[in-house]
Amino acid sequence: MKVLRLTPQTRLDLFPGYLWDGESPALTSDMVVCLRQGRIDRIIPQASYRPDGSQQLYLPQLTLLPGLVDAHVHLALDGLDFKTSVDRWQDPEAMSRCIKKQLEAFLEHGVLAIRDGGDASGWNLWARDRAPLEGPVPRIVATGRALHKKGFYGSFLGPPLTPPYDWEGTVKGLAAAGSDQIKVIVSGLVTFRHWGEVGPVQFDVNELRPLVEAAHERGLKVMAHANSDGAVRQAVLAGVDSVEHGYFVSDETLELMAERGTYWAPTVAAVANRLKVGRGREYNPRERDIIKGTVELQLKKIAHAHERGVRLIIGTDAGAPGVYHGRSYEDELSFFLAAGLPPLAVLRAATSVGAGALGLASELGSIAPGKLPYLIAVAGNPLEDPSALQRLEAVILLERA
Ligand SMILES: [Zn+2]
Image (cartoon, rainbow, N blue to C red; front, top):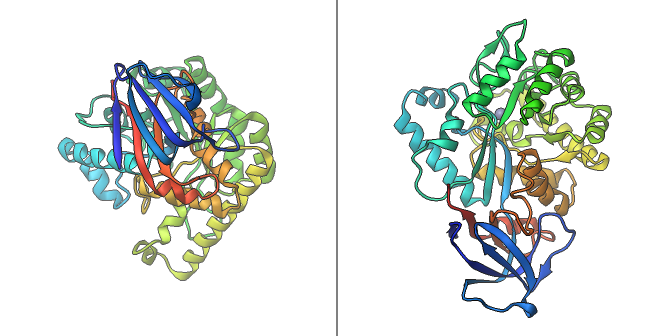
């Protein structure tokens, strides 16, 4: 795989065999994409192209499309072992190596933008701003530390809150620390001892609404971890921008999400991958059945969400047990396809819609004049055969500023 790192000085004209812009229902062919000053300057038919001394790159037979977006990852966790991951937080050098490897894995799978759902030590902010990384790095949207209620699920993601809540002060502090978005934990985790068990709701709509208002006043989106229909509904009614996980959501709440334009990252891999090699042994047959049923229900809900026009996005929860950075993106795409979504809808979720959830719609996720060049080239037509995404031939991205 070829990796092309661009600087604002790069003048490059791309000649892909085919182009998919991140939104259109079909590919176009014989176009030239001209990159100038770190932006996509123009897209013109090859017939009207006049060389101006800029570098040219031919990508014959390949389809050029926007880089993929993983809307939910945890760079501080390795997906292999939770305890080892958290112990590693004490060792900056080991963290540096681990995060570097994970970021490389995203690039190897064509994932050029990620949103980190937080960790209590703020490694996601470090990865975005200060990690001594040489080489290309995907664009990172960091939430910093996630908010949860004291005594409830989420202590490894951020500091505990106790009522009465000072949402203004909390948001101000997170913004000052560099959070691009606010992550809040509204429920617990899906467990597999009993069908539908997800832990209690931590914050209700009246508690969440002032948080959302304080975040929006500062131009920050709110990313809400919520399982159970009750938790999802409270979060959506409070006006959060994206629902993460959303297991056991009802069709009525999906309708509300469609109406309000709430993004949904169903993170199927986060549950399904627990049954993958080795890991499944932790569960007895009854629990394995619960996991399978939970995944089946989630696939059905993805189909229902698509029918209702919910803004679905691809978020893997990479870093969770069995959910490997980069590699699990293929898993999540295959779950969306297994849910019956047409490849076009899955690819939009993976690019333009995902970029919207990251707050980067004006910068990446689609190929249009003015956008930043975060692009991939694959062999084949991904709209007809999504496995083309696994035949990644080139990654094009901006050098980290
Ligand atoms: Zn997560």
